Amino acid sequence: MAQPRKLHDKYFKQAKAEGYLARSAYKLMEINERRPVIKAGDAVLDLGCAPGSWVQVASDLVGPRGLVVGIDLLECSPLLAESVGSNVHCMVADVFKVDARTLLEAAGSLHAGSSGFDAVISDMAPNTTGHGDDLLSARLCRRVLEVLPRLLRPGGNLVMKIFEGSEYQAVVLETREVFREAKGFKPKACREVSRETYIVAYGYRPPADAPSDRPRPSRAAPAPPAPPPGWNR
Image (cartoon, rainbow, N blue to C red; front, side):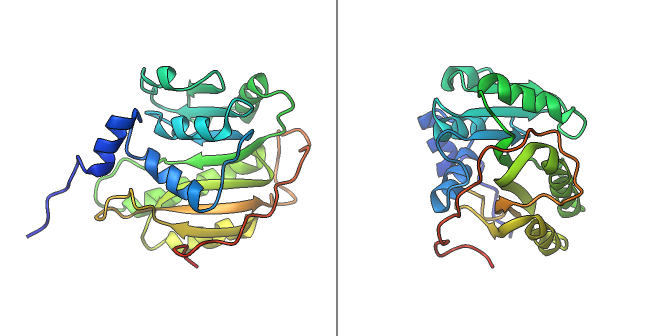
């Protein structure tokens, strides 16, 4: 007999106790603890940010000198404003339809001298039906890769959710084509029965012919440290 799904596991209870809007906060925390994707002072774009748990974590990581811009088709939780500082700006829009300059202008209004985002993070997932969810997830990831030239500065980092399935390895390879390094990682906060995992990538290398609305970047990203055990090859 199949085991019942545990909705209120320890991460759910921990999130409630510690003031995070969703258990997914601990996924980004673990990813960033393993190998920093987000650093103090960074400009971060959160795609599919509602209800706002990754915004909360990113806001803490970048600190008062950084910024976080979130975008989602849905409103973030009203409680988000109570848990983040003035370095956060969230908007309701479709990231695949909104003009990239709108997001860059939001970054510039919060962070003088911004030259594109230092990191793009995405916990987006398709509406699941149990049939073809992995293919829809892979399609979302490919859409994210398509918008990066207009948003992510050269040398920047990426985290995006993907469902394991027939297209998983292909999407990892496509990500490696435009990043110095890209690997899969499944945080402990993911439910055991879930097919979700994450592609974590460092050192963005936009294609030479890619369009860009970004100003010329003012700095390059430092090389990341060697990965600890647990990272997929």
